[in-house]
Image (cartoon, rainbow, N blue to C red; front, side, top):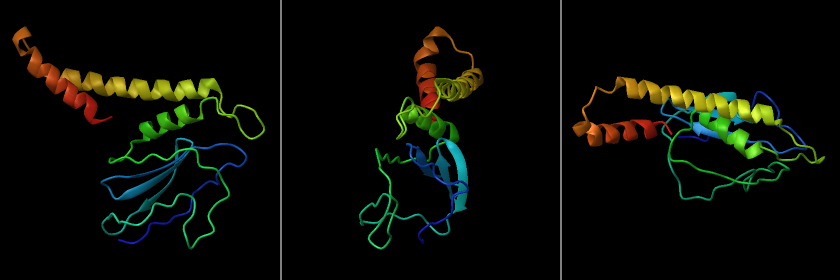
Length: 155
């Protein structure tokens, strides 16, 4: 495989913290998010392969990089869904001041995103529960194990 590059549709905000995320799914599309919103998508050609080289964040040995601060980096062994990225951005940016000392996000926006994600997860759980066959009390252990497995698969 080759390195994957692509321009963002929007510039990164300046003089304030922002949340950026990349996600690569089985569909071979790398998604780039800014503050929880999908910004751009690039198709990955070839197989994604691991290497033993260092991980560079913001620049590498041959590139000048960006003038920015990096507060945290998270790696996952699975592709993040849109709602996962939205919730992570809302949580990360909650109450974080910009470089002028003002909060950069309204509480209402954060709560709206969290409520939307919670409602979506609740609907998914309800659909899974409705799809289970009726059970008797003797089947409770089997059913609870099935529901638990299905309920955590999307998280």
